[in-house]
Picture (cartoon, rainbow, N blue to C red):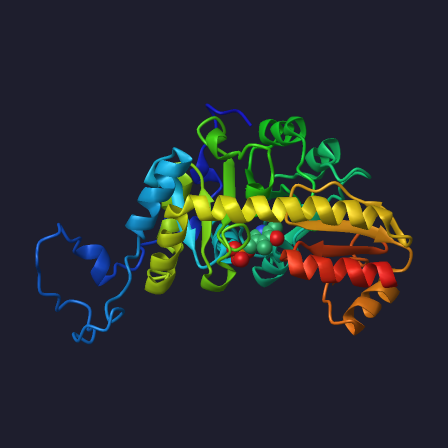
Length: 349
Ligand SMILES: *Cc1c(COP(=O)(O)O)cnc(C)c1O
């Protein structure tokens, strides 16, 4: 990607480029803090805490995230989970039945689902045997309609982070957008790519409060990118896509970094314990390295072991149908009590 030549307008769908977004009441009048009477949005006036529409730009939450990640608020878009953020990327940049994306299986299933929903061809380039991007093959798969390459790092379900060298090559050699999905970054000792959004105008980093932050139930996904990319996404997002309860709960949690860090530390300690135990189980053949809050393991017979654990009341994920994942099981790290129970049962099998 040639930085000086990069022009995001060439990647945006024509209809999005010319679009006039819906202007909500809460967009038009921005409060300066003084006491006003709000008769502009047809809300019920009686205060119950949530009778007013939420801030469409989620300013309080963005202010804190911008400080923590050392970016501008204009580099941030928030969505109803990363799933909405990813869908907005398809809808902004990928012309149905014309454009294509590249994904690297085995990886997160949502990229393919969203490609199907948006009628976008998904060109799959499998990871190498050691679960790294096959950069030459990726670049050979690109054509003039390839809009986005999705890199999931740390990758779900394999757990590893991709090498900095391989990610840099993709960023440099591809003229379209590169999305790095960092859903599991808080469990990794590798640095986030957020700080590189100023270096690479084609870089988009997504994160979520669903994993390390323990807020899967409130649905809050985060997108970091150039302000030009964020402005385009803002044009097409539903005006009130992040509800008031979610904004409040997310704010409380991101301010409370000590609690999040303490829980992540506990999960990492448990992960270490689980890896050590799994390595000693007779029917476990490989325990893959992980930078996430889950462990992928190759076993003798994944279907059999999955059923046995289910029968004992433990639900894990059988990833055997995924490419390069024959006879693999994915274990999410639980509480110490849950993990001890798992270990006890594994040792009995
Ligand atoms: C769990 C997960 C997400 C989270 O999606 P949300 O919609 O934010 O809950 C995103 N990407 C990957 C790779 C995941 O595994």
